[in-house]
Length: 278
Image 1 (cartoon, helix red, strand yellow):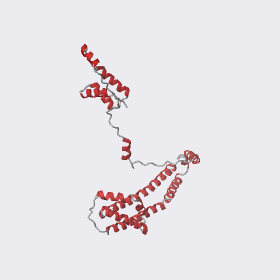
Image 2 (cartoon, rainbow, N blue to C red):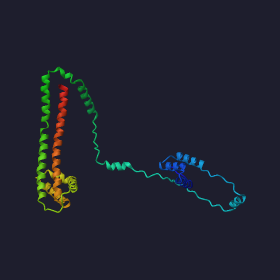
Image 3 (cartoon, one colour):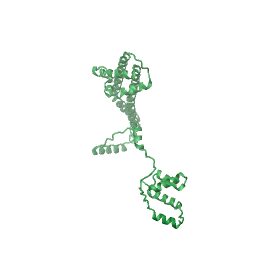
Image 4 (cartoon, rainbow, N blue to C red):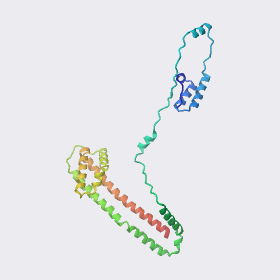
């Protein structure tokens, strides 16, 4: 860190307050963290134009100064700078961006799988769409429809599971909403901020959320009802009901998301088959 001896610093600082441009340049260099060499150069330039003129003293005064005891000033050099404190922007941004970036695991493959993929890609490069033009167009169309139909059928159980989970959650949410509605009224009004806090409290409770869809299980049902009762005491009945309504919308969005994943995969597969064989 660059520094100027105390005695010089005090003098230069005073000159900067009086508007001396050379002194102002030195103070600016200190604030900006200039190198020691650059700072020394500015200090030298300052003293080149600020050397006091030597006025001859009378002989009597010179003798008096020689006879008087000399006070030795101890100059302690300190690293005096007026550089503003640096802000650790990385820690600030770490906090601000927490939860905004997804970090996915990259799964490697072994060497044998790599060789297998190489052979597969080589075969695909040879048997492209031009290769299949030699087959009858109608036969190719029939084959395309058959391949796509068979692939769609593979997802029938997945689609049924999605609908089953959705319906189970609908029944659960309706039942728990009814339980909350039957609780004693309170004096806490519906408030969007309280509803949001209640919702966050509910969905961040992993045990409760894990039990939510299993309304028929006595233990799971008890876990959920206990949680809803404690939420009611904190946020009020109306805000708990509003949070459950938000969860109902989440359930619909989750069903749509899951179905869309399968639709996108079928579309991808259908396009790859059609592009190759049409």
